[in-house]
Length: 396
Ligand code: ASP
Ligand code: MG
Image 1: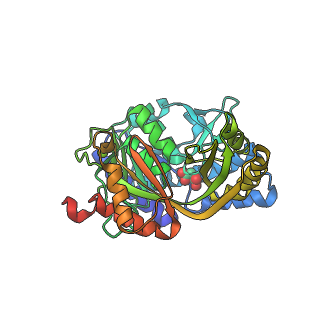
Image 2: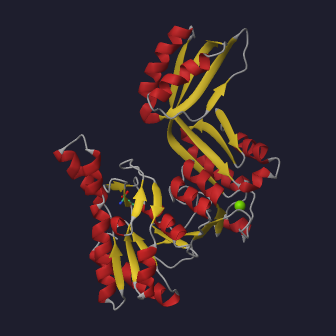
Image 3: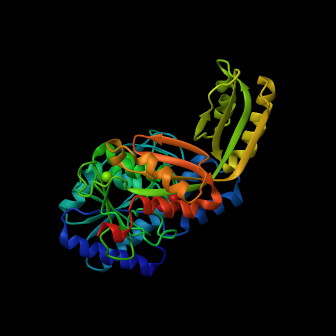
């Protein structure tokens, strides 16, 4: 909802949807760019960003949207009423800027439905036990919507976004990318963690916990979208749901680490203390009681991590530390892996055929990730998409 015209368009769409369903509640986020603008203002007056006031400020964007949308609906002859989180109330824990929803009050929404009103709820905000305003973290309106759907035991929660749904891979990289009709919660969570930017992990997690059917669709057109639902409810049941990638990581190796109990702990404890998120870890098999330990960290933490690890390497008598920035992680995700052997070898074979070297590998029940040279990211994504026949041509 970037402009008044867009708000009217959204209102028109809601008005049309209102004809089809009884009891419609809409969660809004701030107008495009507004949250960033507010953060900018805060930085100018107080770079420390005091957390309580920061949330008071940021939550205002959603208040504006809720009021404008309700007004626009009224103007079209659709009865509507806006609600802020304190009015429902939406209770959260105390963690400003990253609050977790504890309890979503749906009573006033049901009353609004009974009066034939569309309820327009300000997303992203809540109140804590002290009655102070909290916010849920960037992109948090999706989470508000899922929590609301759960509280209302709604049939479905539709997420309107700037893409048409969840794709088998980034359509910007791969022309054959296909929009999925359905995807399971677990697959969606893995894809979100591994780089797909459609939905936040937290929002999908909550949808899974409460069994909320999530329909991801475009806010710009009426295309069908992708349903995120329980595994087994999908009609497709494909082996692999999609291929995804992340760049922004870097690799650190600690060489010839004396292989004794506690060394790995000594390497990683300081990183944990610094709040650095370590992703993949490989420890080689020990030879002559020495081993190499390699792991990845977010690129922005590389300098700090290397500094800490170099100090440690000296203390534990390791040979030294190597690091490398230009790496990427490509991943395939699919529930089907649980029951079908041979997925990993198909992945490795496809990369090998293109001469793409695999630097590190990690797996879970439903995903396989390979770290490769960042130069080959696009190629690897395309090759894997092809190898698992995810493209439109093969499927139809
Ligand atoms: N307005 C908030 C943000 O920009 C929440 C949201 O958009 O979901 O992060
Ligand atoms: Mg599936």
